[in-house]
Length: 457
Ligand code: ADP
Image 1: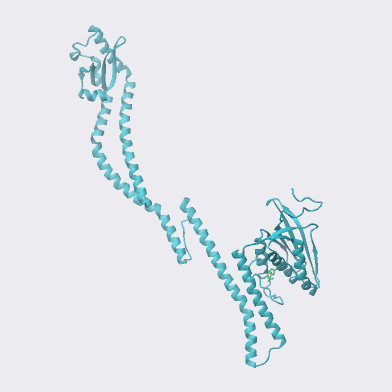
Image 2: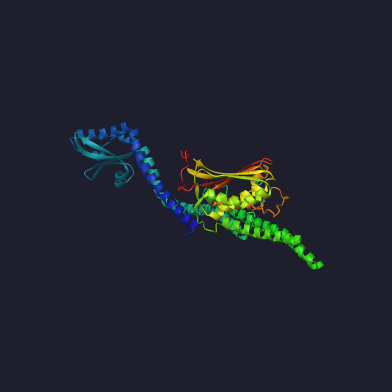
């Protein structure tokens, strides 16, 4: 059933209830006002009752001739009926006996303890209210029919307008979704509304924004990759065209420059592939308990010759005890390798690099973390570059190219590798003051406790 149909049905039922309620109110109101009139003029009612009781007593306990008698108290009453044992004995007024018995106010007549008759009365006020009720009942069917027609028409119109208004946000939301489907840029949802439609709209707007961001990032990545591929390809193409044009053979220097570019290309392609797999969470993590000190030694071994080439002093301080992390070895190795080779690359000859491993308790996470600090005395990173260094293809100094050419993907890959292990990387650096990269990884519970110091609270 459509929302509009449901609304029309429920409003119609409501209308019928309102009419029935009005009828009931009129009915009840008459009886209330009838009793209220008695309470207001109680003395007059009681005087009338006493006059009839006196008549009964003065006529030797009999109602004989009462129909022709004169009662002076009846003057203030529009209707008076004396009813004894099913027979009307005295009557004043215009209403029928049964009508008055149903609608009049009842007063019992006593002789001592014995009830000897009943008076049905209406004073002028009560009679007027009764007339109003009768009139209301008389014209009610006509009013009812006319007003029913009128209210139904008005209600239908109102319901139509109301339902049109109520369903407007739904139509706007549907329009918005259609817009998104067609790829429109400026899609508007009724986000300012305070009701559920507003909440849906905000959720849709956010979803649309994050989809648009993802799409932008995808396009950006594509153009970045194309841009990165172009330079080495152009160099290779230029060298080969020159050889073709001149017919010369390639000098060993040219050969090695082409090989450098090819290596750079293949590293770039591998890193882009690595990163996109990591970001898409494509490879399921198969972690094993790994000894971090051993992993660090492994990475240091691979980078030591690079450091020695630049006369950089590389020192490693392992933890006193074994620190195990649950990790996929190649990923952690890749993260540490990227950080350590960066430290070497961005440290001038004669500098130093210190790597240390220890543990740290994080009360907010209720978890102990392994902390690997890679501190270098290198060129440092300016405050303007610092927030961006983990972005893909970001290089603080675009003019500086490494001998093999930095891709600007190393830190992004390192960070993704650490993130998939529920860790994170911190960086502290200032231009010219060296840098400290700190990797945090959750410690595997089976690690041995640190000797002599208790890091658990
Ligand atoms: P790249 O391939 O250019 O090294 P990365 O993603 O590894 O790309 O690093 C991004 C940028 O962060 C680098 O271009 C460099 O400017 C800066 N950076 C990274 N590590 C260091 C470091 N240890 N010292 C100074 N700058 C660094």
